[in-house]
Length: 117
Image (cartoon, rainbow, N blue to C red; front, side):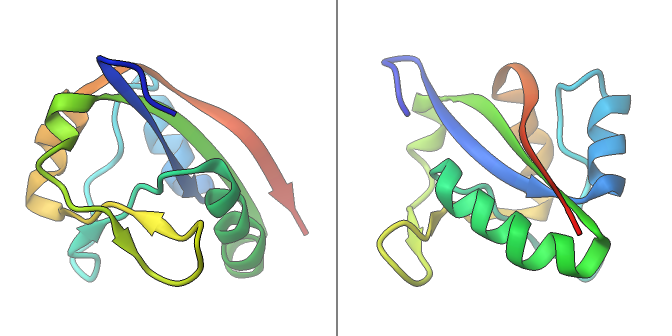
């Protein structure tokens, strides 16, 4: 969803990531691990739900879907990447650009869904 000033994005996360987001007062995503060169926010909740249910729950026992607004003008620098079906659209943010990405989040990161085994 998009307004003139912000675009809503979604991010499936596990418990460790969610705890780090909470420690930031719900304002930023944690740094990527060395083996994770790219941060992948997704463009719609349906896709985030698929990832959370199918991958995070199986891998970690729990998965969450987060929703957050980002300044639309900032997002224009990223090309939308389609990685499968019609709904599988995401942005590829280099790990070294995550601080800048976080500084363009407007408001709080919120949890919209929770899935468990």
